[in-house]
Image (cartoon, rainbow, N blue to C red; front, top):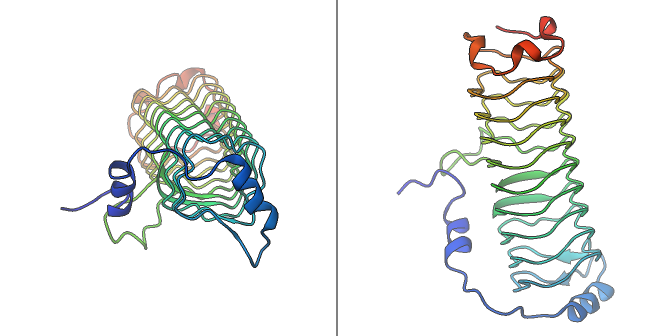
Length: 258
């Protein structure tokens, strides 16, 4: 069996973990965090923290690798710079949280709330389908495929049916991302790398795509009404008619069709 998305580790995390009560309560987590420092991390590795209210906490000196955070509330918490690979985070609340420079690999985050979250310079290879990232900061984020490291087939971020309206994705790398029917209305995509991304049916109305690279992307039924296309690259697009709303876009004459 050839696994094309996250590999065996994620499949185990998604389907084999039993739904059980959290091992710790908020008070116990706070006590561990209070005693922690950079050399003595708060040990939360592989802990079951499902459904806990952990909002507003500082986890920068914590080890959360592989923890079960399903349905947990970590809104406005600081998780910057952490390695959250192989955590379980479906339906997690991370609204307003600081995840800058954070690594999340092989994780299922379907239905997560990441509104206004700080995801700048983060590295995600995860499934975020149907999540809410409206007004989030993804500037300089590296969520693209690393073609040199694909031992189990193509592993990439999945953002299908995700709300990214008003989000800042400037200078981000989202090459080959799955973004079918995603809502990017009013988002900032300046110099964003979307090479080979699947944006079929995506809503890009009023988005700023100046300098963005959409070469080899799938753009059937994507809506560009009111979008700023100054310097936007559409390499490989031979039939402009597939680009919905193109006639109503801005700076179309400055777009690059190769």
